[in-house]
Length: 204
Ligand SMILES: Nc1ncnc2c1ncn2[C@@H]1O[C@H](COP(=O)(O)OS(=O)(=O)O)[C@@H](OP(=O)(O)O)[C@H]1O
Image (cartoon, rainbow, N blue to C red; front, side, top):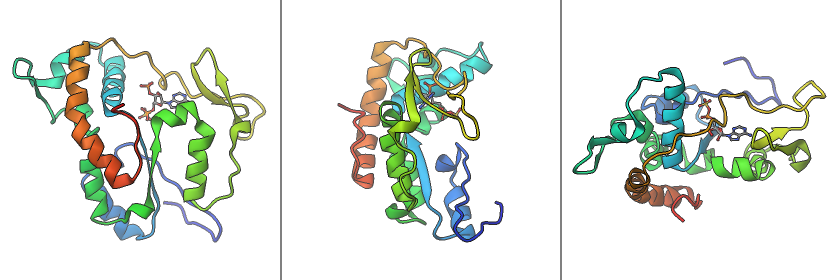
């Protein structure tokens, strides 16, 4: 981590921290008052997105449907598959709460980040104790990309969208498998809503 001057905030981003067992203790040892930000989305869509990313690198992997189950006939879900495991947010959060209080953790809604980026970033700025500098004025909806983009990129006057690897088209998944996953995640989602005090709306 770089040295931080008075008045500066140092940020570090790594996708795997939230689900890494050793991460909370290590970060706690570095600083007890680190603020933690996690972007979460519907765990079923997350699993499909995860699979889509792997598929783009390894086109020969088995289907999503076959990786989901330990046993398709009994409907037993393979919770050791990382795409499934990562979406059990309540379990990962438990691990962090052994070290950090809820007040130091902010969960950003991945869905709201798309439908209302300024609103979600407003929450981030408040959480970090910053003035709300980033507002609606900074975003526009790019029809081609199908996502919000920045009107001006940092240090440039040109608009900026996230790259091709963000916002990929997902494959169609057997609706029965999707339903089975919804049923699987529901109790974990409910626990997660309770723990965070926010209803993310994945089970509506
Ligand atoms: N503004 C904007 N533009 C493009 N994409 C957006 C945006 N906001 C959120 N998203 C969603 O971000 C998802 C990719 O982020 P990841 O966290 O999976 O990326 S990564 O882990 O760093 O590869 C990506 O997931 P997929 O749709 O599955 O590709 C997007 O849905």
